[in-house]
Image 1: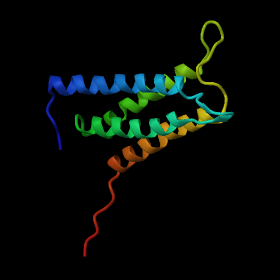
Image 2: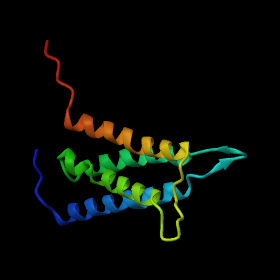
Image 3: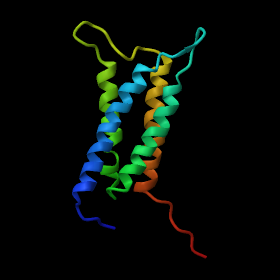
Image 4: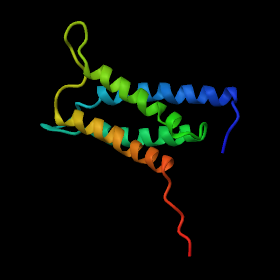
Length: 126
C-alpha cells in the first residue's frame, strides 16, 4: 500500500513529530507530582497513551513503520535533552523511579504498536 505525497500529509506528519517533543516536555514538568509524601507519576500513564496515539496518527499519513516511529524518536530525543544538565547544572528529570517509569511507559507501548505494524500476525488458514 503506497500513498502519494500530499502537502497536508507532510504538514500533519511534522505536527505529530513536534507534538512528540511538546508532550515529553509537559510530561517531564508534571512528573514530580505528589499525593501527600508519595510520588504519583500520572504523566507516565499519559505518555503511554499519547505515544500510542501519535504512532497511530502517523499511521494515517505514512505506511512504513520506520516513518511511523518519528514522533516516538522525537519524544526520546526530548527525554534525553530533559535528562541532561543545563548550563547551571539543573536538570528536569532526576534519577528516580518515576523517571524510569516515564521512559518505560513512553517507549514500550508505542514500540509494541510499531512492532505489530512492522510484523503483523500471520493469517491462519483452515
